[in-house]
Structure formats: C-alpha cells, structure tokens
Image 1 (cartoon, rainbow, N blue to C red):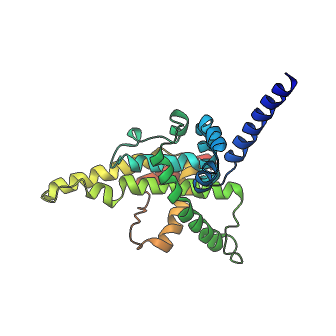
Image 2: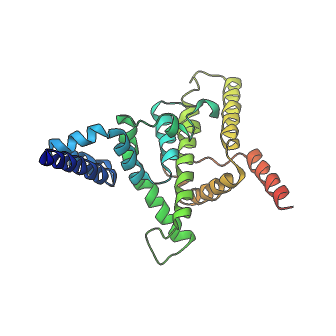
Image 3: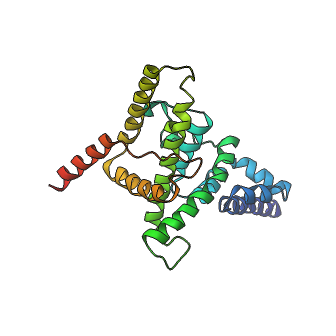
Length: 240
C-alpha cells in the first residue's frame, strides 16, 4: 500500500513538473518539439493544453498579447472597413481565451518584425550605442501595443481594405462617399483610445513615417486632424 501511494504521488509530481516546464517554453516550435518527445509529455499537454498554449503565447508575444491577438483575429476574419464597435476588442482574450490553430499560426509570424522595429526605435530615440532594444519593460510594452494597434488599423482601414470595397465602375460621387465613410471609420477607431494612448500612437506613427512611409505593404495613415485636435484640446484642459 505504501509503495502504491508513493508511486501515485511520484506520478502526480512528475506531471506537475512537466506542465510547469511546458508553460515556460519560449515559443510554439519548442512546444511542438517537446510534446512529441514522449507519450507521457504529450498526455500531460493534452490535459492542460489551454493553459500551456496561453502561457507559451504570452512568452512569445509578451504583455502586448491582447493587442496582438486582436489584430490577428480581426485580420483572419477579414473584418475590413468595419466600425470599431464591430471589431474584436482588446478584451477578447478574456472573452475567448482558447487560441485556435489559426490564432497560433498568425501569432508565430509577427513578433520578429515588431522586435526589429523596436530595436530601431530604441537606437534612434534612446541609445545609439546599442543595436538591440534598450527600452525598459514599460517602454517596450507601450511600443509593442502601439505597433499591434497600428497594424490592426492598417489591416482594417488601410488602402487595401477600403480600396477593395470600391467597385472599379464607381463614379466620382460614389468614390467620394466611400472615401468619406473610410475617413469616418478611421476617426472612430482612434477615438476609441484614451489621450495617453493616442500620444503613444502619434509618437510611434511619426517614427514609422520617417523610416517606412514608402515601404511596400505598409499603410500607417496619419491620425485624422480632427482626432489630433481633440487630443490637443483634452491635453490642454488637463494641464490647465
């Protein structure tokens, strides 16, 4: 009886240890390689797949995971030219915490670009003696959140999004109406953010314009003037 209890305890302890190791893996490639090494490890993963996948996603993306997940889910669902209220929110990770295979695949391909831009931002704006990011954790988190918000904006409201919605045979009046609608949607998107978040967006948007304004595949359109004016008025009243 004593040996049986000891074996059961040992089995549970090993399973807990395996789960802990899986949750600390840095990315999904490592996770896939690890769970295929033995049936026991794979069994532990199956029992705790939701928490393990969520932990690995956080290890891969960092504190900006809600913003990154919002971006990839809206893009994957092709929610182009939709009012901001019809998009997934940054709280969607709480409402729908289970990551699909499509979510995971999309998340795997985006961090490297964001990290590269962060290092360039750090080099230009903070410390030119290092080629890698020297931003603090708080600064890095703000930068990455903005990058995923701007990526979402580009995907949902960029030229490719509203351009595809315009019929090639549209007359000038129809095109003007479509452009006005696009402008209204863009303003609505930025109005969903607080003034401090808009300041972060504006700063990094300016940085991006300086380095990739003409790069193919990017459309980080400037914050609409009306939104900038609203932010300025709010900021002035706050400091007065």
